[in-house]
Length: 214
Image (tube, rainbow, N blue to C red; front, side, top):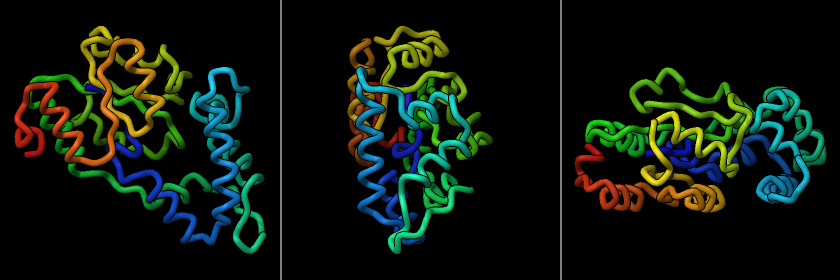
């Protein structure tokens, strides 16, 4: 089983970003406009490289990305957004989803391997000290120079588990990443909430739901 991090193993990304916008008084409309454009380009196979590509592949530093983003957005009162520490502030409200962490431990108890496959927005942000109890393999985009939805990063994650893609289940909260995984033979689960993901995993792995959540 291969899973995304932010928005699957944590609280939803939209909630996290919303908390930052409110806390700092960021111009929501401007942020949404900029980020929508960047994200659309990031998932356009024919689109030009943009700051999200650079950040997620580790081709720019966190500090460089912060300066690029801060230059495009603004506070609600029109003043500039402080670039220094921007990523840390944006994701300050992110919290672990303890239910999904329990599911990962349950999957491993049932005898299945697990892997992390995450597009990184600040490589500092991961609780790497917890990875040993959750994952048999870890793939973070900025460390590998690859990013979802590129085919090669899915194959790389499966390869670290010693499995063909057809024997892997992939969980993500972004449908384009799910589609990319399914295109090479993985079984995709679009994570929206804990109960639905647990039910689908129970079905696919033939493990009782309570064994996954204990």
